[in-house]
Figure: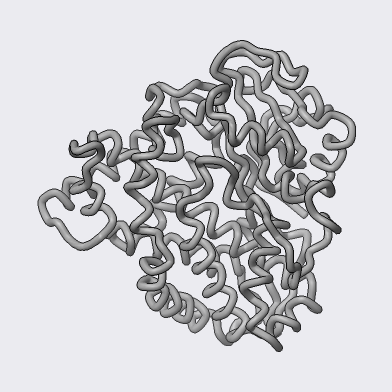
Length: 402
């Protein structure tokens, strides 16, 4: 299996010098986490100015729930520390600390209730069906580049009221902000400015031409009786655009990858589509795409670890989901697993507000794909590429159809 490469210096000791952008991590992080859980459950690295890595569910949950000792002011590990102060942070509510967080999160919840998400399901299904129609008749297709990576882009654009034609821009923003965290600081700054200039143009258009979409909703919203700060609006829209795309296309792609590599599971879902909702919970557990981050608020010793103020702490929810202390047969993908309290959507106050949306997109994407292509397999397992960084999923997924 090949992988996207961003890391400049390869890791030789995961306990003392890990790097989540390393090609080995991107290709297959599960053996790394398994080894660390048993030998060094909280690893440390001097990279990125100092970063810690708990690998067991217990420690990951403790940190995720602890808002007194750990800040969410920035959730992407990189060489610089956040410039936007707490408690709001750069992308509320995911970057917000209490007490600001509660109000910022509450603003978003009406747009992501099961009822609200059900209204966008027909649009999502119609778009998935359009994509598969374009692929019919082809012997080999890239399920990542031609299918999974398009779905959340179009859905989020529809919800925000952004032009569908800007999909390539959205994908570029995602790659730059989330994956290229080790790019030079000047390059990172230029990419962020391009993103925020784009978002400001969309916001200006919505101010001049209000409509019934999520952007206009945020522009009209109030918090504590006051209109939202402009930085709050643009930061939240950036969060929805970025986090709502990369995480979901990664989950869809990983699920299709699993089914291509496990024909017995694919056959079961084709024969009995009613299993799909249960299966997607297992795919979310086994291939959870997101590793979140926190910042240490003050110098302290935490569980024997000498943490310093502004050290990063990575929270690999995928590792928590593979902890044998929490799940029977943790490394086995069991598509009819009955007890499955996974952490794919996070733990604590920042549990994903868009989980209903992600589940809907994943379910619809698999339903439409399996109905159109009941038989498929990996065209070449070595040609599958995976993204590194804090959101892991297939970036190239060539499949043989039939």
